[in-house]
Length: 515
Ligand code: XMP
Image 1: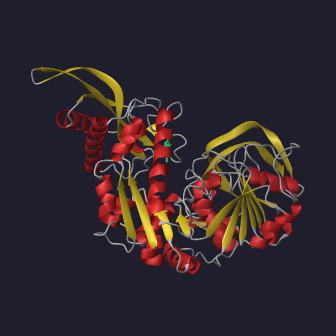
Image 2: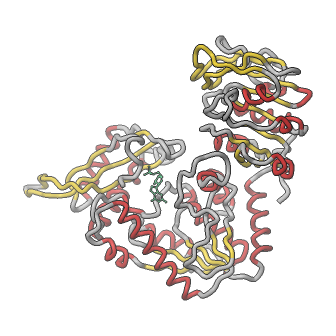
Image 3: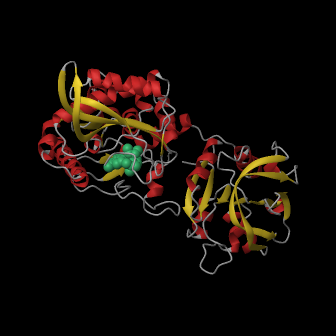
């Protein structure tokens, strides 16, 4: 696809993905690469602009991440942020030193050069997010200082003639009130991008590419009912129709009614041209899980059984040419294939080749998209909103929300409690604002009294967290009356429960799921 590209060179900063997202919000396509990426490769990509991210090191120390001077001599505009700004100065002959005090948090930045292309439309006194110990004590030759703060003489600098810009703060973080304007000024005004990267063109272009690649071949897709695999499946279906077969394994650990909902959308009564196979493997999974309490053992059993079921179905279908995976861009970055992130999750299987299905090639149609972009693509493709805005749901499903042994009875309890919880959160109009929320089942039973009878039943725990990236999370604040309503409905309507807890744990030290 011929499209304008801005690249983000990652020096290990925590906001690397955020920088790329903000650029894409300006309708400019953007990818992240490690600082170890060869200059030749960067030249080949012919980007319209380059952004250097922040990072935890000091650029003047010997082993710190760096980049060769030639990067700044390509004639391509470069914007350095925080560490990236310091590195630009360091490499080009300026001076970076350790400051006496760390500048951290929301800081008033005074713009000295209001005519700077980066600061077009930005207030002279701008609230910006600072996080640095080192500072630029001397700018490189040909550069001028364009902003400062009370503690920091160089909050921004530039060499307009060479299109090189350095910003000490973090425009990509929302606390920098006009940060998005600054990034948009860079990509549109300085780099001259047209800003025409849009979801409708992505969808159209992907469909064309998939058709070209697949030809008359057969395609197989494992559909989970989650956002990513649903959007991937619909994209494929629009491209190649019934050359696509989607296999949906119902492992009996889905949310209440979810299996039927997936079938209603994708099955023969649904809206799409594809072959849909639902495998009702509930009992198989319950049998395998009987007596197993250890969380990791449960995960492993569910994962392996899923593969076995899928393999059996794939055998029935016979050899296929392509296997679809719903890999998305953060999976690619977190698997260490883009940027400088450590390998966080190995289970994404990005570009990996499962050996249990007879196929020739993998198709990953969402590989370039962030989650919110996948959702936009989903809406563009006409997928129902309730599917597009589904919360994240773990592959092992309710298996990791039931503490201890999983049984059909416990699944019923947690499904019913969770459905009530979700209904009430939606009634309270909080369903789009909380990051992730669900009911889990503790392994605790306690004595209660219902009517005139003694009960000895389970305790349900309610979880609701706010999170930006799912790596850290905090308990969400839910009004007490909402919690009380959920509690009373669960205890009255769900047989087997006589106690409801609200889980206040943050991550770390907890995780979002119970196991
Ligand atoms: P934790 O529980 O690790 O969850 O704080 C972070 C995010 O990942 C989801 N999660 C999983 N997703 N397989 C998945 O596909 C899993 O085994 C798994 N465990 C947790 C979780 O729902 C949350 O969004």
